[in-house]
Length: 450
Ligand SMILES: [Mn+2]
Figure (cartoon, rainbow, N blue to C red):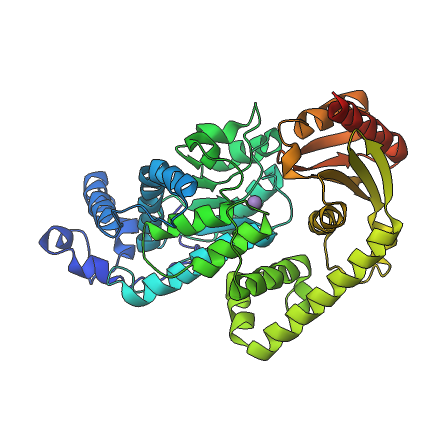
């Protein structure tokens, strides 16, 4: 590790200065970096313990409450776990260990990342324990799987740093499915991992075994307790920075039943929706959106208003077009709708909106017109997004039905998954797309007519 070529940085942590006599034996000139060069394992562990104790001291005792009983009781149950995870996070910050934060590229995931960014900015300004810029790599993640390639990328990034302390990988709002197992296996030797999610846990997923795997489903909650909100609550174990609008944006983004939108949170959600769909709208951004750039747009009032207006008009146009072209199939007292995203999008130069999120918007519009529960299938290329009214949860086991479709077309369907009312089918090719749609419609009908 210490081959002399790796980059070393000067970490001027006042924490190290304040540790007092005990620290003096191992810390020269108040530099935490000295710690990374200690040859004596005993000294190193003594120092490590001091850092850990200091990290714990930074944490807040009382669980964060928002006044919704169902939410607050889940938070209460998770609080200790969140604090433990935050103690680890704070320790990494103090020691300057590399931290990779991967967040899902939707409103929910991005609001989680933004909350963490705001919290860090606040802590860096106000805490005497942290006097230097931490090593954080923000990675907006285009899927809900943590693949082996992702792990290799993260490992390569951390190889550039010299630090005895293990780097940290923080995952926000990924699916909890088997597709992530290979990546997890590759990452967990080199990284400490904190995994914040709210997707139903699929059997065979290896991440559930992680020490810091935190999911409301394990604490009496469900997907309505969004990952962005979870990240805000995680942030609250460290500091009371105001995240109300961010919490609300994440509820809006994932159609949580706890959502009580305000003007500001709606605007934030619309903006995050646009920015995560098409990073080109911020000049100079190529693919990876950082919370810092989100913050800079939000600070520029004219820019953010322009962008919100563009997003709203584009969605309105496409919804009108979709309503006039969607196909409907009767099923009991409800209906199943099928829509072709490519035809609705009209102009394929525009990346906004992304199909999955548009499917949710379109279901909302259809529900308004129908005044009743329904199901929508929106297809585009190799994907089919299925969105179902929440009222139908329990009556229709969407994930199970899509799994059956996959089994029936195992040569053509690569994967299925998602939430109990919002899921998708990924095909290997589009040869059998029509047949797969037809089969799904038939199975949904059967479930509705039971
Ligand atoms: Mn989510």
